[in-house]
Length: 137
Image 1 (cartoon, helix red, strand yellow):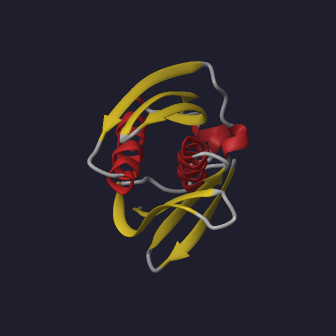
Image 2 (image 1 turned 90 degrees about the vertical axis):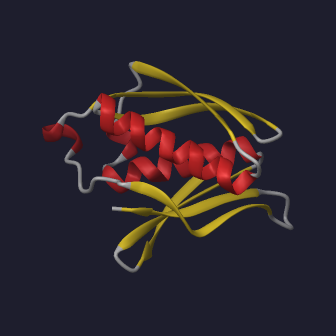
Image 3 (image 1 turned 45 degrees about the vertical axis):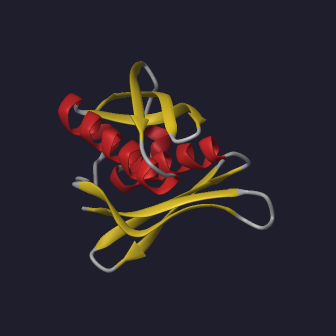
């Protein structure tokens, strides 16, 4: 699984790649955390179950990331590890993280939502999966 952020006007893009669609979604989730802070500084002591179902892969990615953003905002958590199972257009996941510690995590931004801008979930010709979109900060 790999992840990265990319610049996009006033917002930030998040991208994950992996050998499977689930790995790409986990990479996109790690990139989401990276918008806020260094994911390597986030522990994995608390777990949250998330389930999503959507009509296609792209909307499933948006629903997944927006569910994480909701959990981050309402529970004041950051996430660093993701166990994801995708069957068709149904996602079941456990996100592991910890409460925000401003001194240690030094949050750089607050994410408002995942947007359909540059939204893509695709199986690349070389066999890897890519999952990306832009998040509003």
